[in-house]
Image 1 (spheres, rainbow, N blue to C red):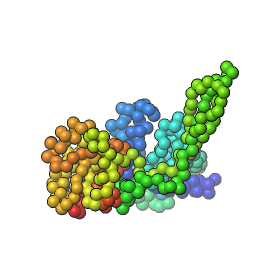
Image 2: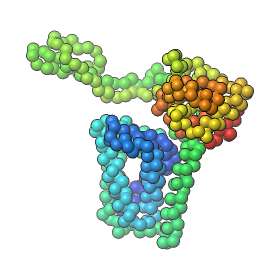
Image 3: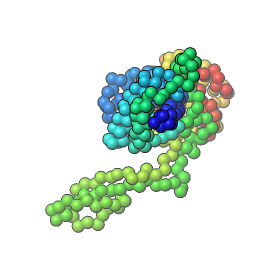
Image 4: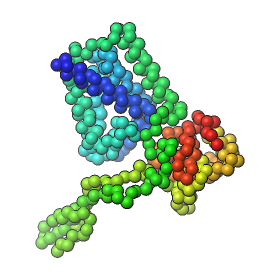
Length: 365
């Protein structure tokens, strides 16, 4: 039992630390995932949506700290009970998402590793088994260091976790796992290779034949049936190849697609503000100086937002901005940069620079 507990302790501790650090690298991204869970279509607890970021930070800090506690053997009973409560909750959440097909990605490992709902649930079940082993054999979890050293390490894990969360929220994630990281080309990320796997979809055709309902399955072709058509349902068996960049487009107020035009520009500055009404005021005040400098250096400057036209014009007038805002999908904008506003420099679709509004002065023009 002692050996089994030791193995479980190492595996659970390391997994919680890795999973927590990946999410701690991008707590804003995890908060978006929590908002998805809190929405009326999933858990139907929308009153928690405004607190998603606070909950996100607390959950991921607790996750990292519990992993450290387990590895160093700090307060074993508290640690194991906390791990058990956390994994029971997440096992329920991933099962609910998988069974009812509500959330496509649990966000367990942020953007570093995408898991399907059933993969997430399976992972949580394995963790639940390992934590139950720890629960039964908690007496075998002993501190690795002296009491003073263990307490200091536990305290340092708290301090480091909260510092990292604050740092990435005030700047940008330390490691960018998304398709819009510096060096990536957006146009290439949107393209689908010729030999890419195609989606596999099954069609379930319902007919009434001789007074009885009959269902015929095809890959999309209309079945040759001597009967009256009733309805058709579809099921995605394999999604096939999905490009890294989805839902990205640049549209004018008239609905014209300007994506290709702007992504062909050699020197382009994009101001990303998914919601102009909630845009950080201190960041908005810095945009005029930045855009003036960029225009003098020969850059083309545009803004991307999901806000309505009247809000665009109001914002432009309020902050005396000398560039226009174009329409883009809100989810895509939240993915591009974890800052509202955030600034990108593009060269023919390739991302050269990306900065948080706090770091506008570091933008090299």
